[in-house]
Image 1 (cartoon, one colour):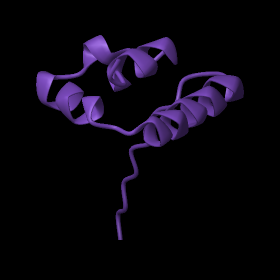
Image 2 (tube, rainbow, N blue to C red):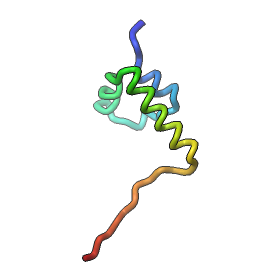
Image 3 (tube, helix red, strand yellow):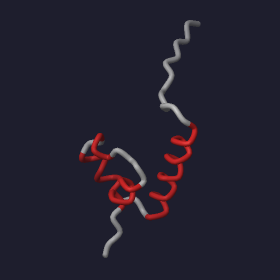
Length: 61
C-alpha cells in the first residue's frame, strides 16, 4: 500500500478541508519524515494552548 500523506496529516489533527486543492496536492507529496515533522510542530503548538495568530505591526517612522 502506498504512503498516504494526506491521511497521515488528517490523523495528526490537521484541518486539510480548509485548504485549496492546489495546497492539498502539495501536501499529498510530502514524505513520511516531512509529515512527522509537520505533525510534531502542530502538536507543540497545540500543547502551548490558545490560537496562534499573526500580529499586525505598524511602523510609523
